[in-house]
Image (tube, rainbow, N blue to C red; front, side, top):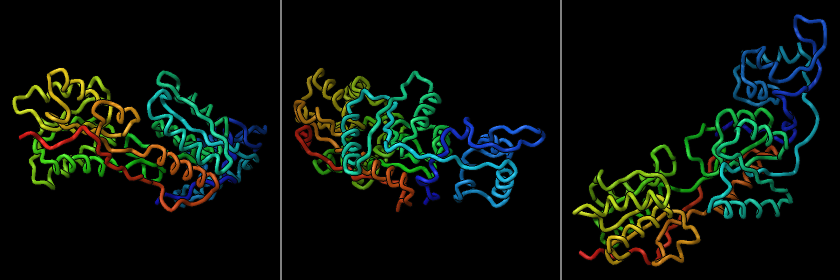
Length: 360
């Protein structure tokens, strides 16, 4: 468990690292000038979040460091500024134009309506200055932040220093233990997809995985491997292809797999876009789905229920994940200690018409 997040009373340190907070005497000078948390941090030789923890009485700071910071706070006459945060949850995307955004926004708005909180949707953008974007978010003083974008360590520290609670939605990389997040049971989803194919009688099951550095892709691949091992089937390295999570890359990977003389009878794709690429590759070489090739995806995008044949896939509950993430973020914003800071919402296998027993 992580230390307690700052509550509403602690979240009033607006622009502490850059703006004036109060007035105090600076050592070596006979004039009075603004004293900020950043100045105290520099003088103490520690980070801004560390000073914020001391000022707000939170744990995670050694006794020696706490004593040194408190001495400087007293010497400089620093006082926490007064004020309050806006009654808004800010939902941050790195890219807003995605097939997943609507489902996520729906879940956030559901909770916001119930708790009578406003919703601000923002996009950092791939080509914008991340620091400036986070400065803008901090300047808006939201009650909390729900980030679909993967936050850097510097961005997380910036939010923490201002006392703005945040939750990472569906993290793509490993996070420190004290960073709250909500994700899905990707390992279990990969296992259930592969178990389904094994139960149908498939023995040569390929997987088109995503990039190795993406956390959910590693988990889905691990679930696939677990199901094969459970069934006593060998893991054949040549049947695992790692490519980006796009339809075009799924198509290219499937063409490679299906050109083998001992081609697989089933393919599990790490997401639905890759699975749609598998459909295209199978059609081009004259293979029928599921007559000649069974296909399973992951995500359950709305479109896959309408393709021909409808895709068997693992449902990732994006709306439910967004609901849980928003509830967690708002609870932290009220200064409550969450029972757990890491939540995984269960995935479910949705069986449609793209899977069937193999011919042989």
